[in-house]
Each structure stands twice: as C-alpha cells, then as structure tokens.
Length: 426
Image 1: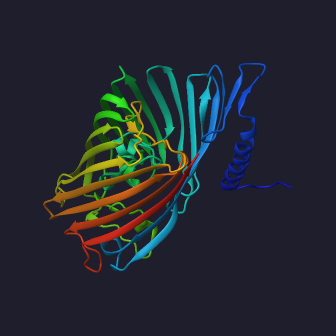
Image 2: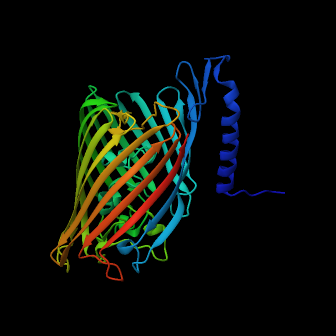
Image 3: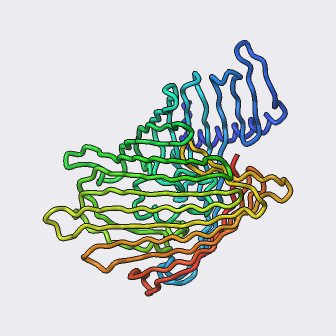
C-alpha cells in the first residue's frame, strides 16, 4: 500500500518531533565528543547544536503570536463594535551553518494571520566574501528600520501604518530574491536587492514575462550598541510594472480589520482604477536614538505612482511618517544590531518581575491626486509591553484612528481599537 502525506502533515510531524527533541535535550546540555570536532549543545532559547570550530551548526526555534483585537467606528463597515481572535504568526524556524561560509534559514508559518500556511523565509547566504554577504531565496526585501526589526521585538503589536501606502517595498509575496549586504568600519550598513515576484498579473508584461522590484538601503550608525544608539538611514525601491490600479488602503494599525471578513473595514485612501498607472517607486528616511532605557525613532516614506500617458488619471503621491517614543520602566535597554541596521530584543534583568516597557507612536499617511480630494489618516497608539522572560512577551495597545475625506459605509471617520498579544519565542 502506498501512503500519501500532505506537506502540512509532514511539517506538523516534524514540529512535534523537534519539540520533543528540544525538551529531552535539556538533560544533555554541555560538550559532546565526536570523531571530528566536538559538538556544543545549547538549549536556552530553542535547541542549537554546533561544532566547536563553528564550521557546522543548526538551531531550531520558533514564535507563536496569539492576538485579539476589539475595534469600532471607521475600523468596521457599519461602525459597530467588532472583534477578532487569531494566530498572527505560528512559525517554526530552522537555521544554521554549513562549511563555515554557508548560512541557511527555513521558517515555515503555520498561521500567518490569514488562515493559510506559507514559507516565511527559505534562503541560503554565502559569507565567504566578508564583510559582504550574498543571500538568495525567499525573504523580505530590506526597506525601513521597523521592518528590518523582527516581528518578535518591534515595540507595537503591528508595524507602522506608513508601510501600508507602499506594501510592495518590503513584502516578499511569492517569489525569489537575491540581496548583497554588508557592514563596513563598524559604522555603515548597506544592502541592494532584486526580487522576482510571482503573485498578481501586475508583475507580468504583455508577453507574460515576470518582472520584479529593486531595493537599496544604507545606514550610518555612529553609536551602535544596546542603550547607546544613533542611527540614520535612507531607502529606495522601484518596481518594474506596466499596468496596475494604483489603489492605496490601510489597516491603520489594526490587523483584525482584515481578519474579520464580515465587518472589518480597511479604509481606502485612493481608489483603484484599472489600467491607468505604469510607474511605481518609493523613497524612505529613518532615524533613531537610544540612551539607556529610552529610545526615539522616526520614519518617512514617499511613494510616487505614475499615471499612464494619455490616460484619464493624473500622478498620485502617497506620503507617511511616524514618531515613536519608548521607555523601559525597569531600566533595560533595547538591543541593537548594526548588521541589518535594526533594533533587537529587550532582555529582562530581574527574572521575577521581567521587563516593563511603555511607548507612544503617532502615524500619519496622506494621498494626493488632482482627480479627488486629498485623503489623510492619523493613528495614535499607546502601549505596554511585559517581557516576562526572554521567551514570553505580553503586549496591550490602545489605538485612536482618524481619517479625512475617508469614511466607512456608516459615515464614520474615526474609531478606537484595543489590541492584545501573547507571544512565545524560542
């Protein structure tokens, strides 16, 4: 008899076996002698096995983010209160080193917030040209400080609404990419990438040939360590498209508005008009400063949507900016990594009470075109994060959204939301 197994079933079985191995390995932490280089097994924060010469290794980890959103007003179609509970991410992560210079990452998301599972990342990187790294596979393009920071360690539950005005700049979708990146002089970080997209007819020309996007990012960080950060960055992205509708919409910081397919509302700031646009590019600026437990960061994004010559529409311009302030009440500093130009985790010093962080963020997005009235969206977010330990994080956000010249079916132009998250990362 031939037995058939679904890919999801195989991955689920692998996840179960791997978890059992991680638990059992707790009893064997230490150094294991072999006929080659000795092995070092670490079980803190997942399961990691590597040779002492660092030529080979693998690490098994993952993250589970269980979210709940309560929202009303412009966040819903009819203005009434709605709520949604869902797994934002349920990712099993496998990464490591082979032959010293080859790095691999395979992250599979069993629940990526839309009821589907998918590859979050599947990539291979070569580091033999140090300090330059060449990476190939499926992974997020490099654009923006907050996007560069892992979803495990961003301050708010959801990333800034400004990314909604140009979602393609850092969305891998389905496709492949190649990126060259590196650090120079303990001061600079830069990356350049090309990404070949597969999702959507807009990424194909009239002959059916797939096209792609180009990303550039540069960072200078005169201070680049936890609690002592001064960071400036610039980004550019361009996608090669011949025909798209130019629509701009935003969840305004509440993912549940699209998880709730019955009453959730995703406000539209520029309507889609088929066949009227053929050029798309974006630029971004980023800055951050951290001193001990205090940090402030800000980003600016501008997207130019070019109308087709001889069409019925004019060029569109979408802009967005944010400002975020955060403070760790228990005194810990946010981590920072120059390689990648990004913030990292907060590690609690007191194992009994953990680390407590408060923050405020303001997001503003605007869209302009001569064919309609300018639209604007503003979101105020205040929040509290409890890092119970290095694996568990509990978050609560309150959001106040307001729109101009954008309303839901009930005529609402403002709304409130509460978002909660329980995260386990290993």
